[in-house]
Amino acid sequence: MKLFVFLALAVAAVGAIRYDGYRIIEIQPLHDMERVKLVVSLADDDERVRQVILMNEHVVASQTIELAVAPQSFDRIVEFLDKNEILFVITNIDLQKSFDETIADNEIRLSQWRKSGMQPAPTAYLRYADQVSWIQSAAAASSIAQTFSVGRSYGGRDMIGIVINPTRTNLPTIWIDSGIHPREWISQATVLYVIDQILTGTSADAQRMRNNYRWYILPNHNPDGYEYTWTNDRLWRKTRSPNSGSACVGTDPNRNWGENWGGPGSSSLPCSDTYAGSSAFSEVENRNVRDFLSTIASTTNVFISIHAYSQYWLVPWGGYSYKPSDYNELLRVGNLAATAIRGVNGLSFVVGTPPDILYVAAGGSFDWAKAQLNIAYSYSPELRPGPNASNGFDIPASNITPSGAETFAGIVATVTNAQHKV
Image (cartoon, rainbow, N blue to C red; front, side):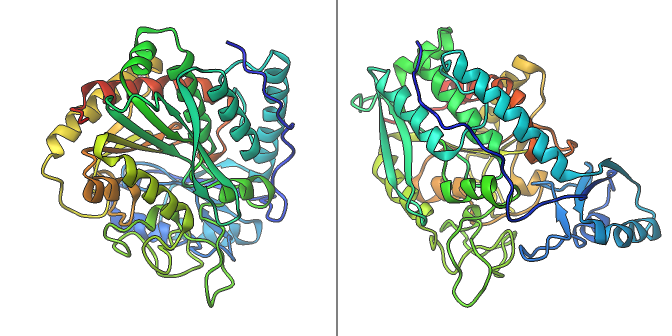
């Protein structure tokens, strides 16, 4: 079906903070966590500095590390790497140029999408107001969907999602969210594709998902931060709420949940990208989702919070070094999701807990959903591109449709193989 949505043309993005002349240095696998820590220590964990930025969402010894380095710091970083006999290559000589090219390409794709009658699934990145317009139109065009709001963000934006089969309370309930880290544009775009597949897809999988489950899907968990990535800083990760006693703004919303809050992998420094906040649930966006999820938890047994990038299908616990008692079951279903993903576009996703694959990261939403709401099948996929990609957050819009197709397959496998409660 055609959705006639009136969307404002996306305008060029980065304003206040630019990355002109920043080079991407790709450090070859070090196979030694001590040397990895040495390299990671080069990055500025302070939003006010941004001379050396760690581009990887996750860092492991067996994979490359990407650093974005400001022109004035380049010689210093190269000297350090050479002195320590750390091999590297330069994969991008102007990060801002890459950002600008992605935006220019996106504008063309958005224009083409609009001229084609705005096919249901957006094939370009949308600003937040346009995401909401699309969701509202998708719901209005369907007899089995309606919008819902979990509340307003710190900046006053209505946090809008879509519920499919809202009145069929006898069905198992599935929760999906994305965009908790706003610079991960592919996550929100992918979830819009998933919504479209559930509502209008003609495959047997799409029809089965549409007919047999109730879905609550929140495509943008952090709308203030997302808009900021368009207008001020393409690499912004946090919320936009002020921090008392600090000039630095925002909290990492995926370190702010009330399960092992303030534990390993989070920071107590307000200027850090992984700042856990002044207290658990200090961020209104998280309180909104917490309170809404609590009202549907009794029938919900699948929770999927989508991130990017690195191609992982992460399993609890993220904030503890030990595993949940049903880890083998979580792993079984996660591996089926990875197999389904590989069958679409040939991409491999690694399945496991963050401490096993990466590192301990406390205060995340999928730990809280499992531990506090008893949502058994709780996952945090990290979408394409793979861990060795350069400029992984700056993934072109041409990836939206293939990412959507493979992610939908992973979700179908998860939902199909989970044991549901109603």
